[in-house]
Length: 292
Image: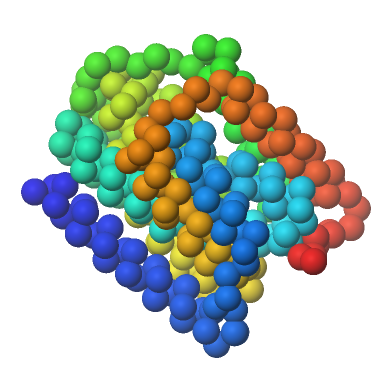
């Protein structure tokens, strides 16, 4: 019953998100997708489905190509990747959701959504320099997590499908704060996987929890983000168009690839983007990198 409700709500959230995007894009004449973003969405969401994550690589590409202003990055990422992540969530809930403790799953999702709603209200108001510094630090954290995974320093996890009450409460509270940080483009996947694995959860079962948290919180942030001037709607549409079929390909066809060397490559490009953002954030002026 819980899975049926969640899958139904995913459909509702997807329809609502599409409506929000179109209501924002049509009056501005910005419904034509950015075709470079279609490619970005396809590549990053393909590997996101396999566990790489999509925020850090997408940010690195934005910085390398100067595709959008720095202040537009959080909103564009959260809204652009939302539909592909909803697709991921539907797949993982269907395949693995029945094995996850329902209280843990629903509790983490609700907490993350509430946190993201608060975070979205904050991120559209903070100065550009603050966004640059926060995102730059987030990318360094992401690079460190990728490196730790490659070096075998990530927790292996256990075989449990649920958590004892104290750990359950802790996990829900932590996912609230992860939801807040998602609005600032600090990805939820890696810290959620680490936390749940440390608590003894089967790492495979973290996937329906992680993807569902993001699938519900990202459309929630879109309520604020799509009405903000700090968003690039052609890039958002492009990422969504490229990302959905890539998710289906990765989850249903490819399923697993050796990821070690790819993660080391991601570490390099993510650190490059982090340095660029931090350099801009620490500069005396508040530069706004303009899209070409």
